[in-house]
Length: 281
Ligand code: ATR
Image (cartoon, rainbow, N blue to C red; front, side, top):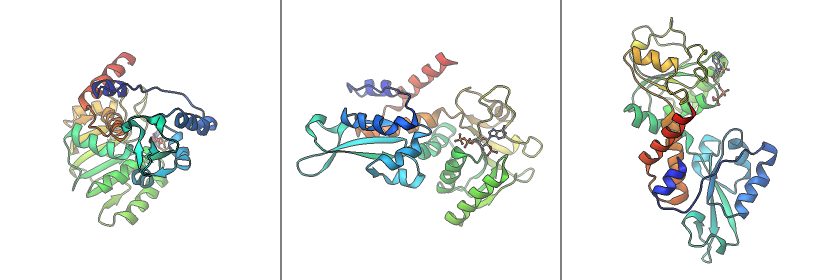
């Protein structure tokens, strides 16, 4: 996805993946700084560890409490910080700083918006899951102006803790930690649990308590398999559905924009991502 985007932008860069053990993270990051990398992405568990390492946190990383994107910047003779990806000669800088960003949370709302065609403002949502991904989704839904939010989780105490956090930060939001009433119209059912990754997984909700015909849209954060049993059931119930591929796409596209300062070629990146996932499945 990133390499297809770089090619489309005509940049002579390469995006590479490395497995790094948590105990090697800091020297690995220092190495990328020394080698004048333009930037990098981090995944679990490094997103939290990198919070401590970066020289500066963008407000996105501060807000979401995690860093998934780092941009390196060099200090020019006028004491101005220039992103290395936008500098003529990255080796001309003696002082380099790292800036941490988070592009994950916004990607959830962008994908729901773009891929499902749903405007979250004023909507009624059921969120399944209260793990790390569920918490960020809940906060992003609230920030996007959702009117009522039903938080469902196997471990009810985790849903309750998120509900408390939401009530403190978003007093207008109606938050519940049980299912909506039968027949109540729901705009979106969002799966943020890991149920559906394996074909043998149970549904992420209780079909006795929630009828998907109540809902108009369903989103699964899982993108492989491309259609989970939850999405299949939602489709059969007449919902407009989307898997989580868009989340992966939009967080990556936002990172590419942070490094290059250019509009990311979304459709080229989407095609490359789909091609890659097709060859893996
Ligand atoms: P992530 O960072 O992807 O959110 P996580 O924090 O481990 O990962 O959260 C996984 C989510 O899937 C949780 O909501 C979890 O429910 P619990 O909080 O009760 O553990 C949910 N989940 C995982 N396996 C499950 C299962 N077999 N049945 C129901 N929910 C499950």
